[in-house]
Amino acid sequence: AHKPGRAWLNVVLFLVTLFSVLYIGAGYALQDAGLVPNPESPDALMMPLTHLHWGIPFAVTLLGILLAHELSHYFVARRYGSPVSLPFFIPMPFSIIGTMGAVIVQRAPMRNRKALFDIGIAGPLGGLIVAIPLLILGLALSSVGPPPPDIDVALQEGNSLLYLGIKYLVFGKVLPSNGEDVWLSPVAFAAWAGLLVTMINLIPVGQLDGGHVSYALLGRHAWSIGYAAIAAMIGWGGWLLMSGNQAGGFWLTWGFLNLFLNPRHPPPLNDATKLDAKRLALGLLVLALFILLFMPAPLREIQLR
Image (cartoon, rainbow, N blue to C red; front, side):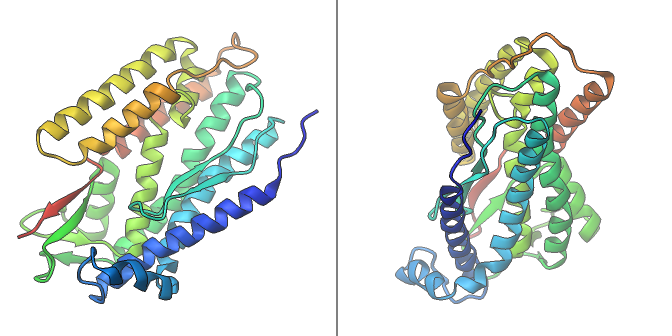
């Protein structure tokens, strides 16, 4: 038998993460309103504390996507009788989005490849079901145009095929182009961050969701794919940095984290039973989703003047 985890730690971490994400979201809202024109000023650190409610649209969107992702894993795992924890949220109050996401702890090896596949695929699908409608809503609340005259530096979010397509659906044109771009509302930026988190999780490495699916499909051959993905992240990140693109730091960070902490997926208890045709087809869907979500340069600062 397995003793249930103590939920108080999950609750505390969620509340701290909620505060962290509200703080970051309030900072963005204050900057958008022109109340903190200099992000490096003391006001940029203190004012969000007194305007936390301004961060609600950002926080509700981002945490809603993360909760949908993690709870999808959790409930499918429980359906298989797999001993898993509730989500542990990871607060990061001085990061771009206020959190590093959330993780669910697997307290025993997966039963078989079928369980591994179903649990792995559930999170990305559940998160996207929430993220895509929120992104469309957020873009409808955003504006399109040239850079505002009082802004010298901006964060440029990365494009993926899915993100480009949804922007085209909402605005009727490819953005950015001709000196114009979409200036994201808090809901849109948080939903975009949800797409980024999903893309990261679909990388076929170790115990990321993509690693679960890759191992369920290919067994120990997935280890070679994982090492190739790590090498690709490090190589691409290094090339971006040498080209002057700050987004290279993102790929180098994820590449080395996975190299040292998460290179190989552990086998399930039953490693012999192959997947059925339906799951093989869903595996191709996961690959297509990863291609649609892939952002070569996820986020960087750009000089506007």
